[in-house]
Length: 337
Image (tube, rainbow, N blue to C red; front, side, top):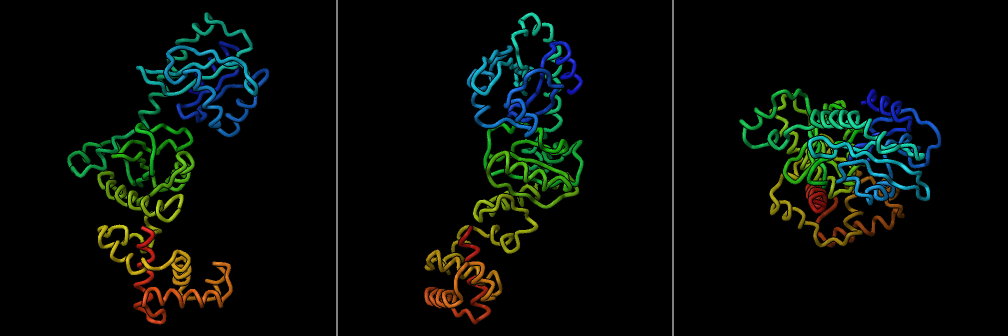
């Protein structure tokens, strides 16, 4: 792709960048002449801002099947956008800064190069995609078929929400597989890439991400996916941007309880006002250490003692009794779910 970009820049004598459909930078040529702030941001930050994306999409580039001329505007130099379409699908955009020399005839001369670049983007997207719905299927035969050619070990990643069709993000490591599983965008990453990919995904989508544990055999990746979905649920309920299954402690057991059992456990502390519930949970999280709890909450120790006394009254439990403390602690965690 870089070779094609360099050849297009040479042929048209223009500054060239290529972005995917999500406006993530894929490649760029040597920049010549005047470059505007939008071009600088795209190269330095490797992605366009939401405002820039909205400005350009207003010209219909997402559905156009021909070069689109975008006039100069405050903060924007004039440019030509070439939608990179392959077999009727837009895989990205090629951008050319235009000083007025890019005639239709010159763009036509570069047409075969545009087509080759679109095909290269399509090929890259195909490499990254995998039939994850089948790989995570309850049907062993479907899993076995989908696992052909996929190498382990792998970690499943689940995203809280996203578009019906998962976009390829060029800032994800190349060996991260993408797909759709049910209502969730789904991803499979080698264990060494899982944390990097999870952090990037939560930044991309702006929502929590759940990560399962690694599985050596791709046919067992559905188990990691099930863990990823449960970890995602914990992330959503506890305010974590990323939740890794192996690091969730007691939540790994609570999140697998049937809803009525979880609700029954949560009911033990249902009468507690939120302030008292937070105080008690902070206290129990710190194994009853008064000084650490007061510091974490930013309150005086006498205030802490008062709140703990009120919590005991509301629940009818004895905070000096180990069994009662355990029950209350579990109940407060269940309450979050």
